[in-house]
Length: 239
Image 1 (cartoon, rainbow, N blue to C red):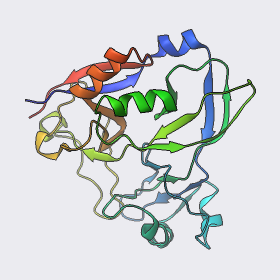
Image 2: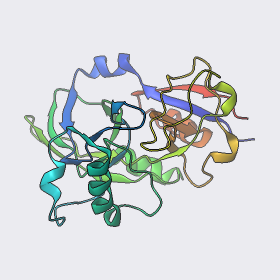
Image 3: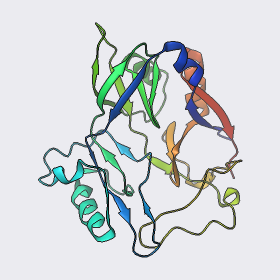
């Protein structure tokens, strides 16, 4: 049976290297003010750095983060949909395009910017050589002060797997039928729904809690064998 791990930032490794990345994507869907559930919200962890919206005439409307009515959000979402992979969810706050910003100080092979995972190109190539499946590295537009800076690639990690219903408290309301908001806090003891987990990817996000990154045993073993610091691994049960 496959084993799955919650992959998170190793803050001790980050502190040891001493650097950081301060960046954002150039375009994003606005947040939403839902007229049905009354919530004003946007999602985190839905990032598509490979998607270039520069040819979209309305791309200027996707530059400034802000909440919009549900009708206006839907209008903008449907303008973007032809540019993204078929079938992906596009909740409020979904971001697009290469990371733009600055990188400061020493950086390890794995670098985090919020919930986004970046790899040095050589680290990404070594993981590919190990046979790790489905790692899409996207170029970044980062400014460095140092000479001969590393080339950092942002991983496009789509939200695909889901939590099993058994770890979701009974008092959590179902998602809003209009805007889709699911007011779930991260369970203390997460369980992954085995039937929803992809079989052709070794790294992905939890579909109904996209700030969490999940890696397979093959990804974990490859990272440890290559000595790529910057990550912690906590095994999660499946059901």
